[in-house]
Length: 271
Image (cartoon, rainbow, N blue to C red; front, side, top):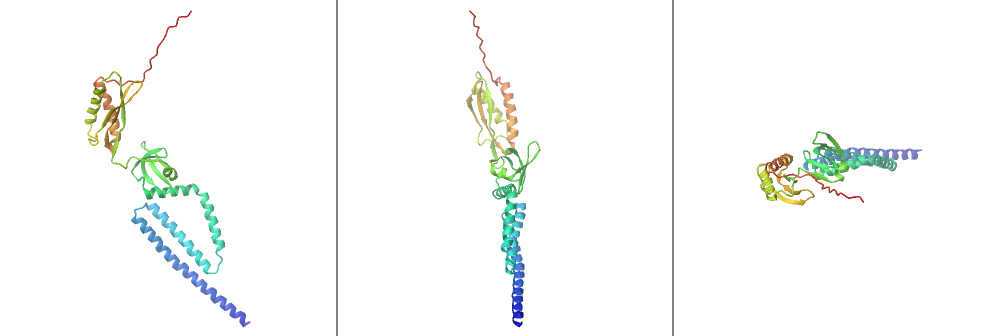
């Protein structure tokens, strides 16, 4: 009888020690997890990452560390943790499959925020949409179109395709084309175009505008006109120069032809 009592006492003592160690692992592990999480957040803040991304990753790191601490504490307490880990893994796999699209958006959002091909305020074209970037979120990017519509683009589409950013460079080239008739004077037309360009103060002198005959079309001789402007002046210059060149051509009797088709009629005498 005394032998059984002694065995019970030894077991209780051993189990109690394991419980105390498990509690110590839980308390100390939680404390260490908080320190690691704060360190990760501090590093991300130092790199000026997006606040939403910092909050999300900080919470994710904290949750993962807590799971490890809890598993270690359970295992030390003598509770079988293999089944718990298997259930947790299966649940994670199921959630991963269920949120496959969302995880793809999240991964693309992280890449957009880290590498910053776009930022708030940029005018971009991506995923078939053109507009100003209002927000680069974890799952979607918000664009404001020129006609004041708000478009939410999933980050998987934004980051998985071609992004054209019109705001990265300070200057842009305005590509235009103007046609004149084959009977018109090319030198006279070139002079008229250059006069319009030189009269617009928004057009940069360096690099100088390019004006040259680009194509001999079916009904017209087409000039390629390529002035350089500050990015903010692009559309204003585009529309104003188009209008002013039309007026200049009219004032100098330079025609702007439209497509023409010559039709030849033949009189065939019947026998």
